[in-house]
Amino acid sequence: MDSSNQPETAEAYNNRGHARKAKADFDGAIADYSKVIELKPDAAVGYYNRGDAKRLKGDLDGALADYNQAFELKLNVAQAYNNRGEVKRAKNDLDGALADYNKAIELKPDFSQAYSNRGLLKRIAKNFDGALADYDKAIELKPDSAEAYNNRGLLKQIKSDLNGALADYDKAIGIKPDSAIIRKNRDGALQAIKENSLVLRTDFSNESAWKAVCAAIQDLDAEFSANVNFVSEQKYDGLETDKLLPLLSGMSPQSFAFIVDNIALTNPEHAILVVDLKDKPGQTFRVIPSALWEVENNLSIANMDFEEFASAVGKDGIFRGFSEE
Image 1 (spheres, rainbow, N blue to C red):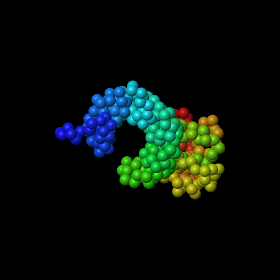
Image 2: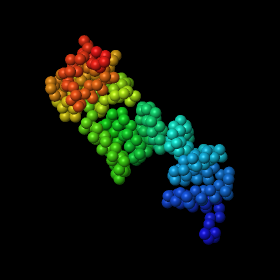
Image 3: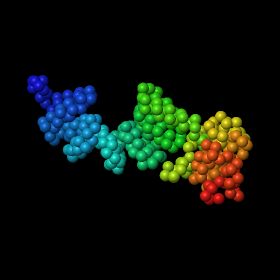
């Protein structure tokens, strides 16, 4: 190689390293950043930039070592903490990653990507409310972030808010129409809407009670779970069963629907109304959230019929599970 074509200063090597990294020439970039470190061993930026190139190349251990050295040299940049957090997350050091994302947000409170990344960690930890708050903030700060909308859509899908998930995927596709991953996620949500049993909210007097009911229905640690779609729209507020029946037939993909009404929100057991839409339209009984999976799983595949559950309720008209009766 003609040495006359080589940069002469650390700044020139650094600039060429950036150019090479932008072209995905990570080995070339690493070589240039290494030269920066050789010329200026106390410059934190050289280690940070080399760590970034190593991260993009997939050398997580090397990237982490360089990031750590950059921080030893008093680097205090939000992007650097965010990037080290991504490396720690990839290495399954979730506590370390969370600490780095928190620091990135502390240094740069309007850092959308850090909120989105922290939301992912909270989602992994099943802190769904915390994850949703972070995704909301990421979108507020950067409303053109397809990644943030997609991540929030995934979270809503986990929480069985399928209509909400679909809306977020649509927003993400509008921003990034060529993303095969987002389109696949959207297809999954759309299919679930066509198949999952409807849980319709008709009382909006107590938000915390509604969230508690949803969490109880969707206990992700339980051995069995219900496949449901939570629908919470103000236009259904206060509607009684007789007014709901014509609507439910078009909304529910199953021969039944679950209604979270005022009784469900105020009853100590949160007993949810189950409505028959096929054999005896309008026939009802109630079920506690922890037993709802038994009703949903069996009715959705016609393993049992509505009457079998209706006749297995307690004296108060509530089904608490066959093992409890």
